[in-house]
Image (cartoon, rainbow, N blue to C red; front, side, top):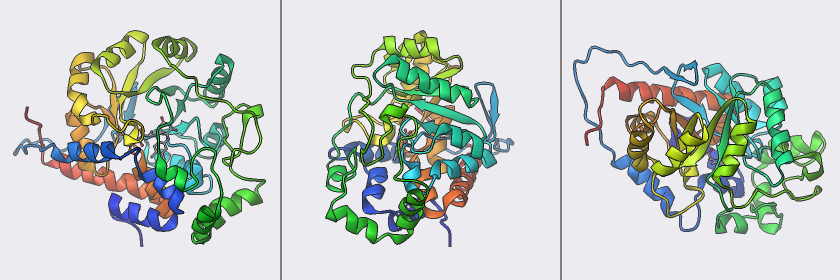
Length: 368
Ligand SMILES: Cc1cc2nc3c(=O)[nH]c(=O)nc-3n(C[C@H](O)[C@H](O)[C@H](O)COP(=O)(O)O)c2cc1C
C-alpha cells in the first residue's frame, strides 16, 4: 500500500528509517521554533476564491529558458544515498520522468557522474564552497563535464548549527556508532540490508562522493584529510563563483530584500528564498513572510525560487502567490524515497501536482 499524501509518506519513512536518519531529515535546530513558525506562516495565509474565470488552470512555468511542466524542482539534499541505496539516482529518475529538475548536492554520497549516467534528465548542481579555490573549482568542472548548466550556490550556512538530537543519535558529522545507534540500525533490518548491506557488498561504507580524492572520507569520518567549508563567505566569494561558472547561477538561501538586490548586482540569474527547511537559523523568519518584499525589490521578471516546509500543492500555490516562480521540495521527496524508492518519488510528484491543480482550480488570489 502506498501513501496518499505528505503525512502518510512521512509516517512510512519514520517506520523504515533508523531514528537517527529520520530525525536528521525531519527535525530543525536548537529549540525548533523556526520549523513551527514556518509551518504556521504557511497555514496562516488564506486565499480568496474567484469564480467564473473561464480559465482552466495551467501548471506549466518557464524558467531559465526551459518550459517546466510543473513549477517544482527537487531540492539538493545531502544523504539521499543514506535514505535508500543510491537514492539520488531514484530521485533523479523520478524527476526526469516528471520533466522537472533534480539537484545534486555537494555533500552527496552518490557522484554527479553516476547520477548523470544512470538517470540523466535536467540535472542541477549545488555548491557549498570549500576552503581552497582549486577544490571548489574542480568540483564545478566535474558538474559542468556532466552537462550541468544550472548551479545553486548555497549561501545560508555560515556554521553547522546546534542539533542536540543529531549528537545524541550519533548522527553528527562524522557519524559515531555506539550501542544506541547500533540498536537503532539493528531494529530497522530493511534499511540496514538496503543501505549498509548493499554498500558494503559494493566495496565499503558510503563515502562523500564529491570531495577531492585525498579528502574522500566515509560517512564515519574514516580515511582522508579534512576539508572544511570556507568560513566568512562574502559577496566576493559569490562574485568568484559567478566569474568561474559559465551557466545559470542561483544563490540559495536569501531572506533579505537587500541581499536579493546584491545577488542581482553580483550577476546571479535567480535566487532561492529559503530558510533551508528551518534547519539552520532557529530565529529565522519564514520565507513566505519575506517573499512579497523580495519580489518587490527585484522586480517582476527576476527568477525567484522558494522552499521550506512545503507539504501540499496548496503550499506551493501560496508561495507562488507570494512571489515565487518555482518551488523546491526537500523533505517531501526524501520521505517518498524512504517509503517507496523511485516509485515513491514519482508518487509524491503526482500527488503534489494534483493538489496544486485542485487548489488552482479555485482561481484563488491573495488579498493585502
Ligand atoms: C536532509 C536534508 C539535507 C539537506 N542538504 C542540503 C544540502 O546539502 N545543500 C543545500 O543547499 N540544502 C540542503 N538541504 C535544504 C534543502 O535544499 C531545502 O532548502 C529544504 O529541504 C526545503 O525545505 P523542506 O525540506 O521543508 O522542503 C537539505 C535538506 C534536508 C531535509
